[in-house]
Length: 290
Ligand code: HEC
Ligand code: HEC
Image (cartoon, rainbow, N blue to C red; front, side):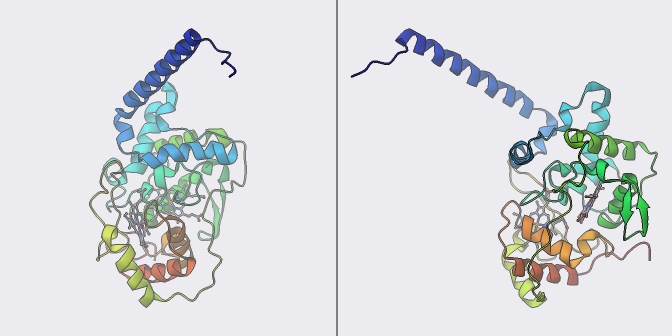
């Protein structure tokens, strides 16, 4: 039999070096995980950060990686997106936070199980908004979500909170700031032209959604660790209002199809239409601008 070319002592050395490297990587990860910011991150996010590289050839960046000169502001912005009610209480009284729709605080490349991405939004604004009938800035777009999706109040555009949110969005977009028409923004519409049936939708809701969002749609509580996500309300006084993007049947149906049940999107397109119709028949706060 032919002998291996590598002598045994060499093999031992290679193996010990490998063992030390693995140990170091483990320790780094362990201490990084102790950073309080990471407690709110789900494990899925680690995977999502890698997906950017795999699919589009750029790395998604975490807020903790921001350089010292902007780090505080980026992290404050991140915190507002994570827990809007606690970090921007004057502007958001409901239980909804940005991250409940913009998963991982928007730091994803969209698609299945990733919610609405916000990576690269600074390059997409100012732009014409058909809803507003005029060109709007990114700050105005953010305020649309405060007023409609969170049923809250707009932020003064020169407030610290607004600057922090913008700093955060700039930071997570840094690798794509030279690109236009980013394919992962928005949501891929459903192909099915099925006539939504809210009676079937109610049955789907009861069998697939109540466990988390509750029979009353009010959500509440948290998913068990290690995920630990808060479960958002999807109708009722604490939910998005009638003018929100999520109140559009086609948007909600596509969101559910791509994202629900949480991290296990598995409905057919027709089921997504049906359950979206049922959810939107339930009460939501009125449009504040009427
Ligand atoms: C109830 C769900 C929901 C919540 C909560 C929410 N948003 Fe949104 N947001 C949407 C939808 C839907 C869109 C439109 C996506 C599209 O273009 O299809 C959107 C779009 C945006 C955009 C523009 C994205 C683009 O591609 O042009 C920004 C910026 C944004 N949201 C920021 C925020 C911020 C900041 C918060 C928290 C204060 C927030 N959103 C909370 C649902 C939500
Ligand atoms: C395993 C628990 C779980 C199940 C089951 C589940 N969801 Fe969710 N849902 C969540 C969580 C958690 C979020 C927020 C995700 C985040 O913060 O990253 C969410 C977000 C949402 C949102 C956007 C935020 C909001 O409040 O408007 C909608 C709409 C939604 N779910 C609808 C549904 C529908 C419809 C079903 C059934 C087909 C469903 N969900 C099943 C846990 C769940």
